[in-house]
Length: 572
Image 1 (cartoon, rainbow, N blue to C red):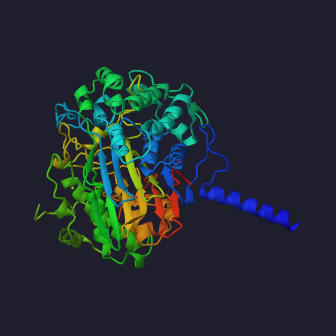
Image 2: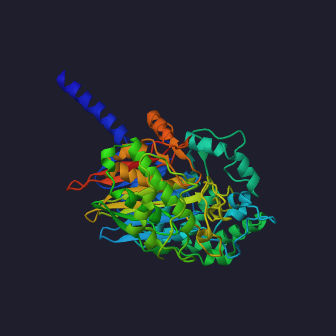
Image 3: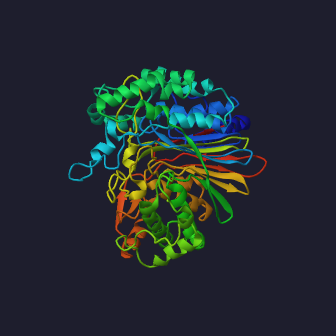
């Protein structure tokens, strides 16, 4: 009797272990798949916003691809299975570290069309028309995602046709949508009907429900053109023609020349020390490289670890450095190709020491009194995914359409959403965008300029080797979420799972409110209110992904997907 009991015990243990750590009994299919939040593996891991995208990336690792191969496949699959944010009609940033020790940052952020003007969203009286910067054809910048993918490919190993085929199959044959996707699509039906000149496949009379199959034949055709013709299959030829026809029908301003001349750019990475670690993140036009560096440097010499996670002292200190950094963001940060941004000064120890002079340990700051620093010398719908392979390559990518489903416009005949990134410019000094962020001259609209972003894909190196890969969507909450996640792991010694899923908070200078998630400790809220904070509970803050690489011969990789969505960790 003992042996059958032991076998039964081992089987139950394996099932429980599989459920927790993502060891699938059967390979997922487009119609039968599960969401797994953690994976502890030894070869390679992928974390993304959708289980089918994560699975596609892991399959490429199994086929001999490296982290860059898997990232390309994951990115293209997200464009199919996560239409609210995964995209080929938007843009983003990549931060990567190669097995040979090279840090890479790639900018494929959208650009303002050549016909864009500084005051294009102001009416005759000078009032902002944010309805035009946020919805419809005029809200779109020139997409950079496909140019970015081909710029990534030079670091990959496998043929491009092999990397894009999973996305083509998912678009052509369809997949079963999740409950969250059905809810999201149903909540946007009115906007789809209002802003599209031709009814897209995302409109369904009677509404969507979990398990329904979403087939995207037009998107499959577009992906095949990219497979067969490379980047020209998007920026020229039939797809470009369809984009231009869409612009003409909806009075947009993207031209053939805007598309043909778009290029992705490799930037100099933002690399700086934090305690015994090295942080690698994205430079401008992502504000993250400046703001994250400012915040970490302002807390580096503070005894955060002794304060304790989500203690009043820790939350107060971290909130105030968020306030200071975001005040600087509003005043000084923009595209350095178009505006002189004093990054070295903004991130210098002397400047940040002066900024911290405003900090009061027992009292909330006041954003009416605290503004951008004085320089004495001369920086919410998105998706993030990340990959680590057994060779030592790590890729962290954040891409976006800006708002959920971007401009809500689908290119008729091509099947993909266009972004609404023009709203990330400062349409008028001091006027907040859809995320409440204000800007100034540094982020004013100009032809060909890249709009300021909050996307902060990041890596942490320990003795030159990848230790953490982190990033999140979430508009202006992105950089504070990455900041908190890093502090949670590096200072408070939280597990990656807790650092991802514990309640987060956010302050961005204006509005002068401390936003907290449900579940944030009630007693801490009350103590912070007594210090003078205005506290507002809001919905989810970001959907953070973390991969932690444990040193040693076993090459243990721990991947965590955020519990706030369908995010899935996978690996082998």
